[in-house]
Image (cartoon, rainbow, N blue to C red):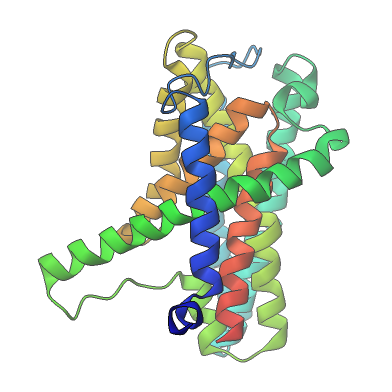
Length: 277
């Protein structure tokens, strides 16, 4: 009875995820047959195509942020954070529009061939919930290993840093800022990053490896790039695991909506957890 009281909802979620993961391993011969039916997405993208949105994003956003701060003058910390998120959302929309144009131009069957088909939204959302449930214990394990290694190398004072956006929620009790951060984390961020890293980068790499384990190679490389894009190295192992899950979902289903939903649900879970604290 006492043991039952110590079981938390997090324990039940992890147990369900591990059970589903074990079933997946058995069904796919330890993952070896998981992507046996995966085929490259037909496209005629030049090699430089993924660098176009990367240049727009990583080149223009810092410049736009600096210009906005210069024009705004002295602001409170929360107002500066609010303005930064406004710039992020605006440029995310611009970069996303460019990527949709490129996808429509270079992919067979246009946006549907890219993996964007509104008719599959309900199916992709349900599958995304299951996919995230399966990978959740692996993400927790990656975090635990990272903390263990951090304490082993740096001592017991080591603490994994919180994501910058989540820190802003903790530091500033401003509803407009919270709403904007939540929108950035749950909507604009996942759409932008999944179109870029899964839709363009993973597809480009996959085009070079059309046989064998080509899909897994593309997933691993794009997931590593996705993880390293984030500021804190301590987050990289868990984000790499998440990236592999999203990359697998894309290759398995052919739908880009599925990794977008996984990413959005993951971010929403973290935002809600911080707000509850």
